[in-house]
Image (cartoon, rainbow, N blue to C red; front, top):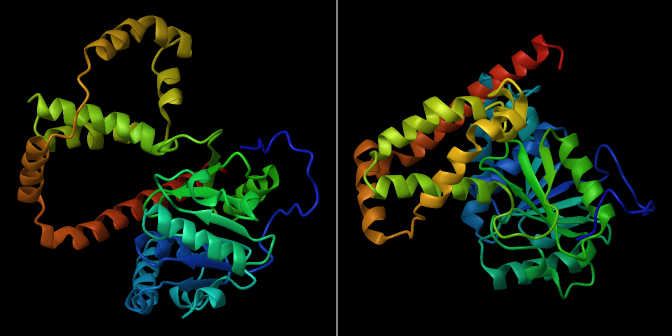
Length: 331
């Protein structure tokens, strides 16, 4: 992958606001949240989904989310004004015509992804950025044969990107440095927090970190050290409170008087020992069935959508607090 910090390319370089609309392909939860991200930043957004029912239901669902955001003062305009920037399109060609960025959100099926990017490469203007929201497939697996492969990359969000701003930018070996620079500037301009993944790696950064913690949580659960609810409490009312505003490296830097080196000298032996005795979780069906039963006793499947809305409102409350705190401290 080209290193955006080392390239001498200057032609076609852009910064600031996009010169064209944003196209969102796929209107499930991730696609609808992306539409909110760009529309609330003042950009025109075009939506397309091969499933007409999904497309028809997209804007009403977006309006519901915008109404929640407005209640927490997380949009600077009315929900109607933001929603007016979002236009459903019956065809892919109509959605991507003149787009500055295409954000693809279709299922994680390699053949389907390849076919979609071949169409995007054919239908878009030559300098359009082509991004995939995939959480698993490296850019190289679905763009290798494309004439415009240098403008293709992964922009992996956290669900929902309208509330969790991280976006991981990861190109293929042939993705140009200019593409990644333009992408970073664009996502920053709409309020996201882009990071570069320096080389293709399965799971990118977030899912590898999340996977390590999930593996240990499931292993502890399988070995009978705690029930599911208590392990959730350890995260929610323990590590999660700090990690909501600090990363793991800042956390350890602040947890010893002498910083990171002091922390390593104090606790490095402990963590080495823990690593040596760790038992990886093999995703056994029996343990998953037990966990499913515990979770369903706490949250019936019929209540999943309502609880998801609750989760989103909790995220909104946290964002509103962080926004106020940043203003109070002049950040």
